[in-house]
Amino acid sequence: MFSSFLQYLCLAPSFTNVLNVYAFCNLHDVSWGTKGSDKAEALPSISSSRSQDAEVAVVEDTTKIQEDVDAAFKETAIRAVTKVETTEQIEKPTMDDQNKTFRTRLVAMWMLTNAGLAIAIENMNGLPSSDTKADEASLAKKQNFYFAVILYSTFALSFVRFLGVSASASCDQKLNTHWNLSVLVLLL
Image (cartoon, rainbow, N blue to C red; front, side, top):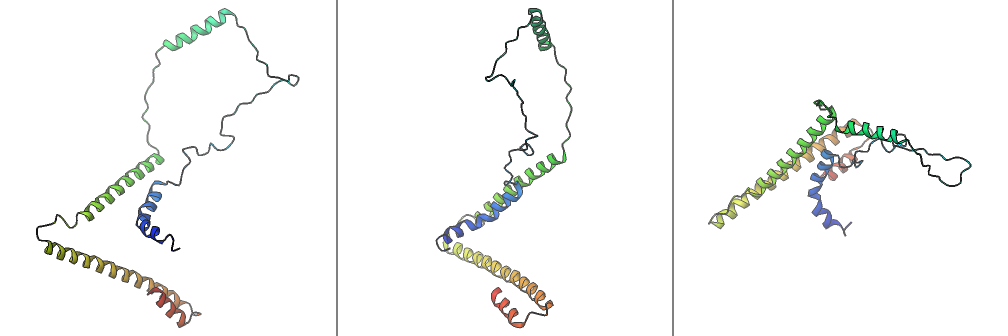
Protein backbone atom coordinates (compact mmCIF):
# COMPACT_ATOMS: atom_id res chain seq x y z
CA MET A 1 0.00 0.00 0.00
CA PHE A 2 2.71 2.47 0.93
CA SER A 3 4.77 1.74 -2.17
CA SER A 4 2.07 3.03 -4.51
CA PHE A 5 0.42 5.68 -2.35
CA LEU A 6 2.21 8.59 -4.07
CA GLN A 7 1.12 7.35 -7.51
CA TYR A 8 -2.43 6.98 -6.24
CA LEU A 9 -2.46 10.55 -4.95
CA CYS A 10 -1.15 11.84 -8.27
CA LEU A 11 -3.72 9.93 -10.33
CA ALA A 12 -6.75 10.33 -8.05
CA PRO A 13 -7.89 13.69 -9.51
CA SER A 14 -7.98 12.20 -13.00
CA PHE A 15 -10.33 9.38 -11.95
CA THR A 16 -13.35 11.68 -12.23
CA ASN A 17 -12.55 12.53 -15.83
CA VAL A 18 -11.52 8.99 -16.81
CA LEU A 19 -14.68 7.45 -15.39
CA ASN A 20 -16.83 10.06 -17.11
CA VAL A 21 -15.13 9.33 -20.42
CA TYR A 22 -15.88 5.62 -19.96
CA ALA A 23 -19.47 6.39 -19.03
CA PHE A 24 -20.10 8.81 -21.89
CA CYS A 25 -18.18 7.14 -24.68
CA ASN A 26 -18.73 3.45 -23.84
CA LEU A 27 -15.05 2.74 -24.34
CA HIS A 28 -15.55 -0.69 -22.81
CA ASP A 29 -17.29 -1.75 -26.04
CA VAL A 30 -14.37 -2.83 -28.24
CA SER A 31 -16.34 -4.99 -30.65
CA TRP A 32 -15.19 -2.96 -33.72
CA GLY A 33 -18.73 -3.12 -35.08
CA THR A 34 -18.78 -6.90 -35.44
CA LYS A 35 -21.67 -7.63 -33.12
CA GLY A 36 -23.38 -10.84 -34.11
CA SER A 37 -20.77 -11.88 -36.63
CA ASP A 38 -18.87 -13.96 -34.12
CA LYS A 39 -21.45 -16.71 -34.53
CA ALA A 40 -20.73 -19.42 -37.08
CA GLU A 41 -24.06 -19.08 -38.89
CA ALA A 42 -23.49 -15.37 -39.52
CA LEU A 43 -20.05 -15.84 -41.08
CA PRO A 44 -19.74 -16.65 -44.77
CA SER A 45 -18.66 -20.16 -45.51
CA ILE A 46 -17.76 -22.34 -48.45
CA SER A 47 -18.46 -26.01 -48.83
CA SER A 48 -16.30 -28.13 -51.04
CA SER A 49 -16.31 -31.80 -51.70
CA ARG A 50 -14.25 -34.16 -53.76
CA SER A 51 -15.10 -37.51 -55.10
CA GLN A 52 -14.49 -40.44 -52.82
CA ASP A 53 -12.18 -42.27 -55.18
CA ALA A 54 -9.86 -39.29 -55.84
CA GLU A 55 -6.88 -38.99 -53.51
CA VAL A 56 -5.54 -35.68 -54.77
CA ALA A 57 -7.27 -32.48 -55.84
CA VAL A 58 -7.91 -32.25 -59.54
CA VAL A 59 -8.39 -29.07 -61.54
CA GLU A 60 -10.85 -29.51 -64.36
CA ASP A 61 -10.41 -27.47 -67.50
CA THR A 62 -13.66 -26.66 -69.21
CA THR A 63 -13.78 -25.60 -72.82
CA LYS A 64 -16.47 -23.35 -74.20
CA ILE A 65 -17.52 -22.71 -77.72
CA GLN A 66 -16.13 -19.43 -79.11
CA GLU A 67 -19.62 -18.11 -79.87
CA ASP A 68 -20.60 -18.52 -76.19
CA VAL A 69 -17.49 -16.66 -75.07
CA ASP A 70 -18.17 -13.87 -77.59
CA ALA A 71 -21.81 -13.59 -76.50
CA ALA A 72 -20.82 -13.41 -72.84
CA PHE A 73 -18.23 -10.72 -73.64
CA LYS A 74 -20.70 -8.70 -75.69
CA GLU A 75 -23.30 -8.87 -72.92
CA THR A 76 -20.72 -7.74 -70.36
CA ALA A 77 -19.48 -4.91 -72.58
CA ILE A 78 -23.01 -3.63 -73.22
CA ARG A 79 -23.80 -3.79 -69.53
CA ALA A 80 -20.57 -1.88 -68.75
CA VAL A 81 -21.26 1.03 -71.11
CA THR A 82 -24.97 1.35 -70.32
CA LYS A 83 -25.65 4.26 -68.00
CA VAL A 84 -27.22 3.14 -64.78
CA GLU A 85 -29.87 5.48 -63.51
CA THR A 86 -29.99 5.64 -59.78
CA THR A 87 -32.35 7.63 -57.65
CA GLU A 88 -31.05 8.96 -54.39
CA GLN A 89 -33.19 8.12 -51.44
CA ILE A 90 -32.78 10.26 -48.38
CA GLU A 91 -32.26 8.00 -45.43
CA LYS A 92 -33.99 8.98 -42.25
CA PRO A 93 -31.78 8.62 -39.20
CA THR A 94 -32.65 5.72 -36.95
CA MET A 95 -33.04 5.99 -33.22
CA ASP A 96 -29.58 4.48 -32.81
CA ASP A 97 -28.12 7.19 -35.06
CA GLN A 98 -29.89 9.87 -33.07
CA ASN A 99 -28.53 8.41 -29.82
CA LYS A 100 -25.00 8.33 -31.21
CA THR A 101 -25.32 11.94 -32.39
CA PHE A 102 -26.59 13.02 -28.98
CA ARG A 103 -23.75 11.16 -27.24
CA THR A 104 -21.17 12.75 -29.54
CA ARG A 105 -22.53 16.24 -28.91
CA LEU A 106 -22.73 15.58 -25.15
CA VAL A 107 -19.11 14.45 -24.99
CA ALA A 108 -17.98 17.43 -27.08
CA MET A 109 -19.84 19.89 -24.84
CA TRP A 110 -18.55 18.15 -21.71
CA MET A 111 -14.97 18.39 -22.95
CA LEU A 112 -15.39 22.05 -23.93
CA THR A 113 -16.93 22.99 -20.58
CA ASN A 114 -14.14 21.16 -18.74
CA ALA A 115 -11.57 23.04 -20.79
CA GLY A 116 -13.38 26.31 -20.08
CA LEU A 117 -13.48 25.53 -16.37
CA ALA A 118 -9.75 24.73 -16.34
CA ILE A 119 -8.97 28.00 -18.13
CA ALA A 120 -11.21 29.95 -15.75
CA ILE A 121 -9.54 28.40 -12.70
CA GLU A 122 -6.07 29.09 -14.08
CA ASN A 123 -6.93 32.75 -14.80
CA MET A 124 -8.92 33.41 -11.64
CA ASN A 125 -6.20 35.52 -10.07
CA GLY A 126 -5.81 37.68 -13.16
CA LEU A 127 -2.60 39.40 -14.13
CA PRO A 128 -0.24 40.33 -11.33
CA SER A 129 -0.08 44.00 -10.49
CA SER A 130 2.95 46.02 -9.47
CA ASP A 131 1.96 45.78 -5.79
CA THR A 132 3.06 42.27 -4.70
CA LYS A 133 1.82 42.71 -1.13
CA ALA A 134 -1.72 43.41 -2.33
CA ASP A 135 -1.52 40.42 -4.69
CA GLU A 136 -0.40 38.14 -1.84
CA ALA A 137 -3.16 39.44 0.45
CA SER A 138 -5.77 38.89 -2.26
CA LEU A 139 -4.44 35.39 -2.91
CA ALA A 140 -4.50 34.55 0.82
CA LYS A 141 -8.09 35.79 1.04
CA LYS A 142 -9.13 33.62 -1.92
CA GLN A 143 -7.33 30.60 -0.44
CA ASN A 144 -9.06 31.07 2.90
CA PHE A 145 -12.45 31.26 1.19
CA TYR A 146 -11.68 28.15 -0.88
CA PHE A 147 -10.65 26.09 2.14
CA ALA A 148 -13.69 27.33 4.12
CA VAL A 149 -15.99 26.16 1.32
CA ILE A 150 -14.26 22.75 1.25
CA LEU A 151 -14.44 22.45 5.06
CA TYR A 152 -18.12 23.37 5.39
CA SER A 153 -19.26 21.33 2.40
CA THR A 154 -17.43 18.28 3.76
CA PHE A 155 -19.03 18.86 7.14
CA ALA A 156 -22.50 19.20 5.59
CA LEU A 157 -22.14 16.02 3.54
CA SER A 158 -20.80 14.09 6.55
CA PHE A 159 -23.65 15.37 8.69
CA VAL A 160 -26.23 14.22 6.13
CA ARG A 161 -24.54 10.82 6.04
CA PHE A 162 -24.57 10.69 9.85
CA LEU A 163 -28.29 11.54 9.93
CA GLY A 164 -28.99 8.74 7.47
CA VAL A 165 -27.03 6.22 9.50
CA SER A 166 -28.67 7.40 12.72
CA ALA A 167 -32.15 7.16 11.22
CA SER A 168 -31.54 3.65 9.94
CA ALA A 169 -30.00 2.62 13.26
CA SER A 170 -32.88 4.03 15.31
CA CYS A 171 -35.36 2.05 13.20
CA ASP A 172 -33.63 -1.18 14.06
CA GLN A 173 -34.46 -2.19 17.65
CA LYS A 174 -31.61 -4.70 17.91
CA LEU A 175 -28.84 -2.12 17.75
CA ASN A 176 -27.58 -0.62 20.95
CA THR A 177 -26.14 2.78 21.78
CA HIS A 178 -22.55 1.51 21.61
CA TRP A 179 -23.00 0.85 17.90
CA ASN A 180 -24.34 4.38 17.35
CA LEU A 181 -21.39 5.83 19.25
CA SER A 182 -18.92 3.78 17.19
CA VAL A 183 -20.57 4.98 13.96
CA LEU A 184 -20.31 8.58 15.18
CA VAL A 185 -16.61 8.14 15.96
CA LEU A 186 -16.06 6.43 12.60
CA LEU A 187 -17.74 9.24 10.68
CA LEU A 188 -15.83 11.96 12.45
